[in-house]
Image 1 (cartoon, one colour):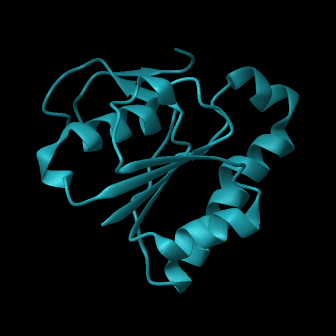
Image 2 (cartoon, helix red, strand yellow):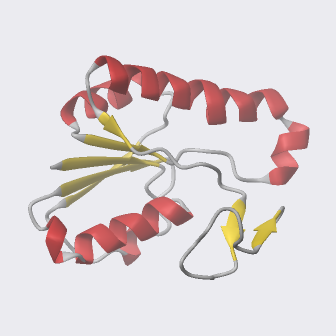
Length: 142
């Protein structure tokens, strides 16, 4: 299985990639991580099953090709900086919604599986198991 993680250097993308590479159940899987940054990538375990591509989700030719080659797409690209929500609301909306929607539409058209996160702003306080009706959550800037 070929897993495409858009936003692969972000908090969630990095930790998910690390978990996949360390989990024996995924030994037959490869991961392609895409991000503008690679600050965390050097901390990943060395593996020939991982490829990092320095690209922007708005590089449509690159992203479209990667989506076509993937079995599963995890779109974690988002501006997660509350200050920018106020200063650049249209840029945030364009990236967080419109570009991700374009990814989802293409994945659907190509019959690809998508695993989509709900938000980058809601973090639990570590209570397990998580229950969306009763688990105590943290809202707002972290």
